[in-house]
Image (cartoon, rainbow, N blue to C red):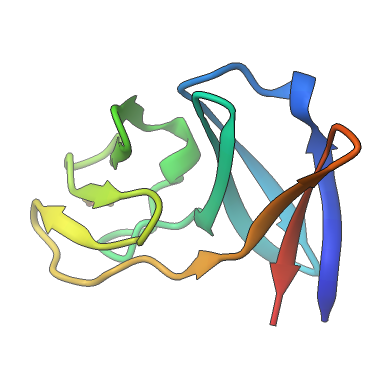
Length: 102
Ligand code: FES
């Protein structure tokens, strides 16, 4: 499994999200004021792409039915579902962003 380069730091503006695919797994990468995080991209409610949702502080709001998740921990904080998101370790090295699949 291991670490996978997914983008460079400059590819993603602060408070934005982007979907990447690693070995067939859809992952949402977030830039929160220069700190990068990664969660599963598919909402556990009805599979909407969370990277198309709205980043509000350190939370992501699902674009389909507005479930809300804490990005650093994946914790569900409300909405029509009560399932936390899978989170992935994320690190920056020499201006490049890496996500770890386990
Ligand atoms: Fe995300 Fe319904 S698909 S809340």
